[in-house]
Length: 217
Image (cartoon, rainbow, N blue to C red; front, side):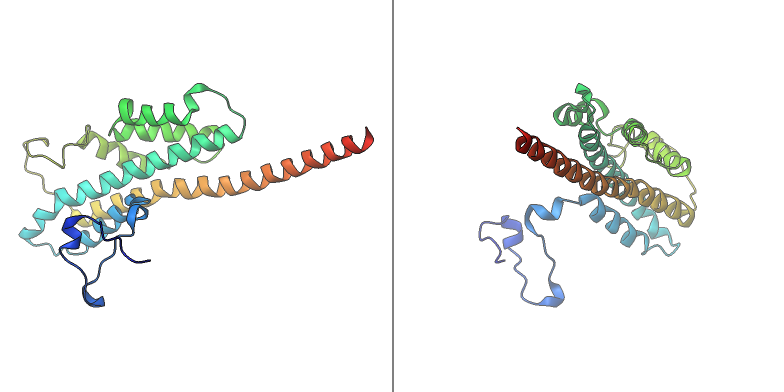
């Protein structure tokens, strides 16, 4: 597909002339799984850590990337889960997609704890395993550190303390927590595939019953 000539001016200012310097943005499709892109960027940033004083500069950007990735993947999972519950015949108004989207944006906002709690409710309603407690604890603690989604974006939002942190251990814990939380969407998608096959089979059976009834009468 040829690039659109009316792309953002900033991008048009730097057209790629060689594969070695090329980076692609595939239209809106690039944003479909933005959480994966953020997590990948966090992993690459963490890989630059060498235990030197200059590494202190990556801490807050690294936290921001993982924190935002967790928020987006949980919200995506919630929106998918309520659709599955609707397909199962649940009729509660609270499961309407617009109501859910409004609740996520206006009530939960960027509060990781509240978002995680809702995700756990939907997983339970579908008889699926919850996010494990060790990963959930990391999400909750990260949410406590950044309750409004501003702590890693603006100065003076974090406590005025000097913190000595084992980055290697914390990186491993947060990376694992993200992978675990993101896996909830994989589980939901597998559930959705089984559900779709079941519903297709039920529709086929119903069509055969209706055909038999027409033949009889």
